[in-house]
Image (cartoon, rainbow, N blue to C red; front, top):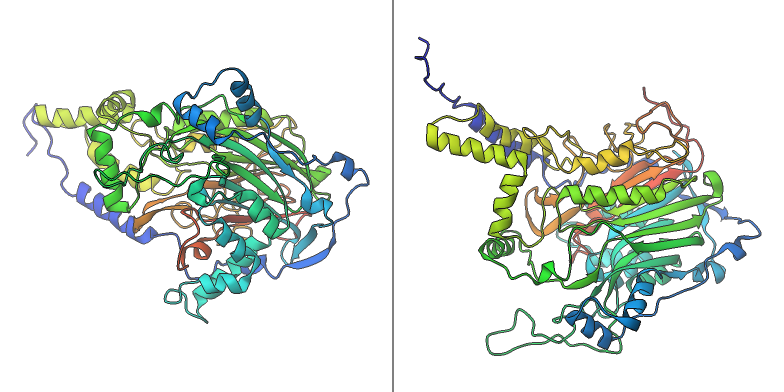
Length: 572
């Protein structure tokens, strides 16, 4: 019998539980993205044979960027900056020069070290590239030891998780070797002279250990009065203030990114981006209200992640390094090291990417763009009740969701199936930054950044490689970016984890490779050339996560780029 006119149709009672159950099953099934089963195409990345030393053009010595280093600010100048972040006169000029003066060292090349072309049976000669955010450089000396000594790394392995002779241990050692043999390494969160990391010069420490040239670009100066020893630590007991121990002669407070290369460096460029959606001085000083306090307590209790103030001056930057690689198309490769803003909405990271793409549009030779793109769906900047309310109004999906809830309370009706849509959308977007965006109903605010990169064209008409082939991805997965950034059945393998994740929750894919070979005109053309195209991109989860003490909250990534057209079948 049909309902009387004007009567609200009953909501389907089966859909929400079914969708919720499905979502929970999906979360449980997706797991951590870390597997003890070797990757299906991992055998194609080994064994690596070293050929003779690379021969460079006779004029290479003249083209090398000479060693340079910026004029670091003194501890006293940093203390003054902590009180007034907009200095005047000589200090202002010194600061401006500092942001535009990257550290450059070709010491490895000038001391006689030469790269050797590496070759694998599947691809022939390759350029092996890695990227890694080594969390605030806290364990950089351990990383340097692990990458230069297999025995030392083996001693760091958690014996209970990966006992001798286990498949997991074999996989960990395989991943260590793949990372240690990288020709180029992108690094983020590199400290110079910060007390939290033992005043280490992180990039230089790792470069010297691995016998590599390097360039370093400062992003920010750590001027929090707590780090500078001017204010008590937040964990001080009541009435008994504790202060960080600070050595003024060693404190430089520099936080930035680096690129290590076995090939010589011929150009370096670095400067602050115009797009700075978060002010690490002003916004970090805002007093936490009840909404922010609740977020911080929840993060500490659930994920064991402490959220504390991080007062800095500076901001996200553009960082380009050109290296001479005789076997690559054109003989030069441009390296773009990105570390996009975490404390903002996805649309602002997209704007930062658009700005960066504008700076590289005219590059005629191959480009490798990599780093920590912070491609999470959330904004982790300090929140407030006012911001929560404003974003409910400012975001169409949130506004419609709120309207739906209100209509259900007031009139006993809802937009049909609108509540269920939230579960469906969560399943669609779960650890899938590349999931499609359907505005309002099924939004994915993260994918805009990737669409910008996919649709971008260089002046020479070439594009970044977004292909995914079973024969060229590490785990035989197809789909966007599978060759350069490993996928699983649902979404991408995650590259970041909070300290205490709950199953798959608290894990994200933040770190990425984007490669331009200069030979590809369509980002998804599987009939196009594969010379210098990404192959077997892999997230080295086991390498980092089954140690007695993890190196970082990020997992390193690695990818192989064949210097010649590889003898693999093209997929249609």
